[in-house]
Image 1 (cartoon, rainbow, N blue to C red):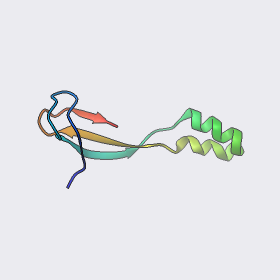
Image 2: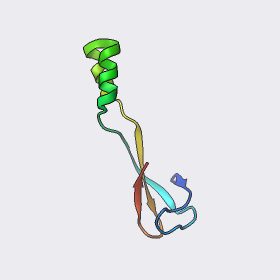
Image 3: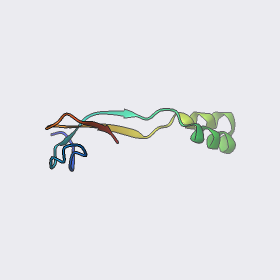
Image 4: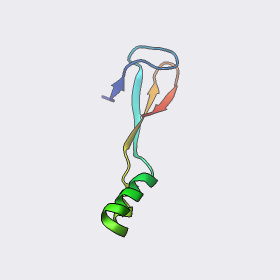
Length: 67
């Protein structure tokens, strides 16, 4: 069963948002700078470490949101 979140922010349907995809976030300049200061050139790779982002879609109106 797909993971669901509460209400759709657009149509306000209860428990209608279903996870449709997941991906890793993109490059973070702040993490790269912090990594370079702490660990030198190898730390720049820390900027590539991203947060997992999940796309949810409303079963009623089709609205999509990425969290």
